[in-house]
Amino acid sequence: MNKDLERTVEIVDGVEVSVKGNEFVVKGNGKELKRSFDIGKIKASVKDGKVVLVAKGATRRESKMIGTIWAHLKNMVKGVGEDFVYELEVCNVHFPMNVKVEGNKIVIKSFLGETTVREAKVLDGVKVDIKGNKISVTSHDIEAAGQVAANLEIATKLTGRDRRIFQDGIFITKKPYRTI
Image 1 (cartoon, rainbow, N blue to C red):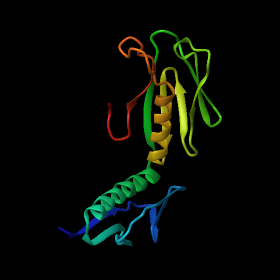
Image 2: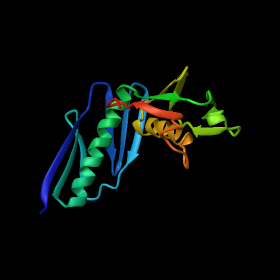
Image 3: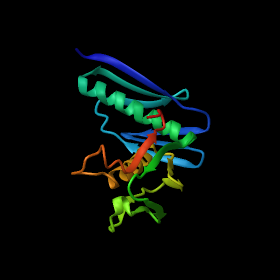
Image 4: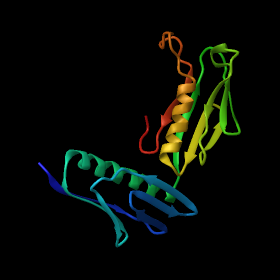
């Protein structure tokens, strides 16, 4: 059954949102985030300090898309106001690991005593801070910060070994919205 749907995103003070076709641009505090969506029949507009998303006679696909766009816009508005922080922890039982930032990559040496160097890519606009065995990934773009944190976890992923014994790796311990 098709129904009329409407979602709104509050725009906080100091943040400016513009909509041009299917591209959304959020600016504030010297930061800017751009995102394009396949919005289909969804109408987007900025009115009275709110972004209004409207779908008349929405199908299931448009219902899902309006929720996706709404969630991304909320994260974009929040991101230009304050940074998103992922916290990770370096865990090693067998061999001490060396983790350091070199340019736009993170270099992991001596993982499980390996002589090969493992690397994780750092995306633009993301700041990585390493203090001891704690790693902090900070960005105003939640997707970029999450991708860098995932790159670190993937770089130390183990296959073909018993995870109960080989517990070494880099693991996410805190995400922006919840603690694990």
